[in-house]
Structures are given as C-alpha cells and as structure tokens.
Length: 135
Image (cartoon, rainbow, N blue to C red; front, side):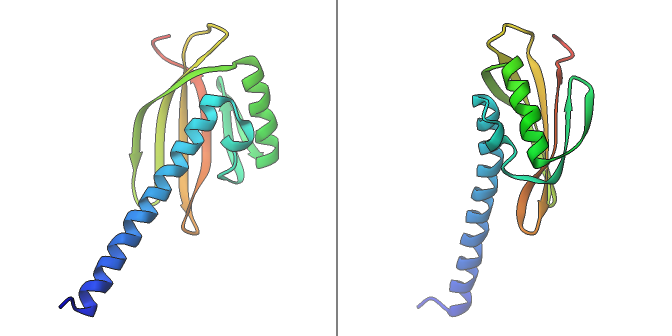
C-alpha cells in the first residue's frame, strides 16, 4: 500500500516536472516567434518594460513600443532561419543565444535573450540583436 507521504512526494515531483516543461515552452515560443517574424508573440512574455538593443543601439521600451521596434526589424530583416546556439538557466535567470539569418542575404545575426522569473512566470527582460563576431 502506498503511503500518503509517498503520494504527496509524487505529486510534488510531477508538479515540478510540469512547471519546468511549461517554462521550456516559454523560451521555445519566444525563439519560434523570432524565427517566424511575429513581433507580437516575441514580446508576449515581456516585463512591463523590456530592454531592446538592435545593432548596438538600445534602450528600455514598453511592451507596445518594443512590438513596433521588432515589426520594423522584421521588415528590414525578414527571417529565414533561427538556430539556438546556447542556453543557460538558474533559479531566477534564463539566457539563450541564437543565430538568426534573414532572407535579405545579410550576414548572420546573434540574438541574446534574457528572461527573469517574476511571480512564478518567466518574463522577457532583454532582447539584443547584433552582428556575429565571425560574420
């Protein structure tokens, strides 16, 4: 017979696994939105204010302002592909880098994403797009 303590431990373990899976979905959804040029979806998980830097020029934007910035970015650099390069996460911070290529034939761009855990949800804090050092 399974004890109540053991059942409780299994439920906690399952809740942790499901929470972790939902968290991975957050980063995957953001990267997928970048790959398809969906500015609204890119900023869907953002904090009230998000730091955006494009080609060395950056500042804090409201979510709505950042959507307009990325609509213009996708107009100038329509997405062709995006490949996640690195990912690192701790209890409160999550970082990822990806290689972004455009249909314009420009050199590959490096995308840096920083998310922070806020009120039990991962929120986009920083999005930086720059030239790759080897481009």
